[in-house]
Image 1 (spheres, rainbow, N blue to C red):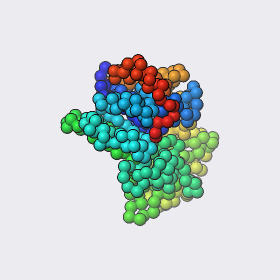
Image 2: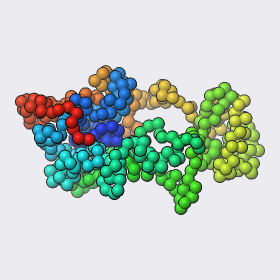
Image 3: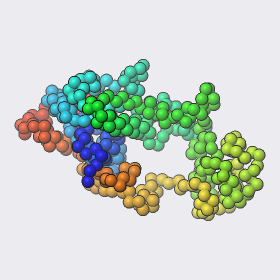
Image 4: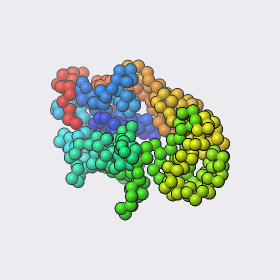
Length: 398
């Protein structure tokens, strides 16, 4: 079976989430990903927690199908090994601290002279220039800078995302930019430099609230789990105390909701609620009316009415509910992936492709592939042993 990125070699100086998320997706498509880690400790995300058979939940999520090469790139022998690897690589991805790659002699200008076909993708908090260039950036800090916290949470309490949304956004744009650069190289024969900023990735994702607040207009309010500008759209409690999430998108659905769910067709033409703008402006009154009707129904009865009326709805699942989700099981979305501590379940990447199966290979231990990678570069056993002896754990820059 041929995968889209078979034969492509990616070298990654990566840690935490953004770059590893990008490169894991490249590996899913068949790319060989060589993950360069600190000797000894490795990617610091390995130590975030011990929730997966003693291993980190973050690391388990985004590091399958990779080879681990432990190098202290401050050591001359290690730097030599890295440069030999980059000589024939297709892509370099890095999300080290601001300026760290350039200080190690790994700027795009240097690497372009070393390998003109190399695609270099730098992922940072704020980009390679501008007044914020040298600021450290973590996911929550970028959520804050990008205005995400201003629209997320309750009226009284701003809230961060429960997942690393800024890292994921940057990783996704790095991934798609690399795919585009590979296509472009197929036409021009030359590599390119990609500069991905977490702030700019989140800025794109924040464009709806940006435009909602266009030209100084009032920004969308924080409304908890409810939609900020569409109503009713959010969580509602049924008579048995269970919560059902539902959403209406247009006036046809609003009429069907009043007719077949509330069983009160007169509400559909009530002047306070006859358009989404009116419903949003009078959401407290409408919420009270809806909850009065829902109090007479169990969650199961409510869902039955919503489904019959063609109104979108959902369970408010926790993690146990997602692990056991019947739709994921029915579509056979779970696979088993090997780790240093044993097999774990993993979701297939989104998107079913009829032409190939995604790669779902093991998660590596720190430095697991040193000998094999260096031997493939032509290093002797003695040279490999010398490198291993010369490296001091935990001193790599980043």
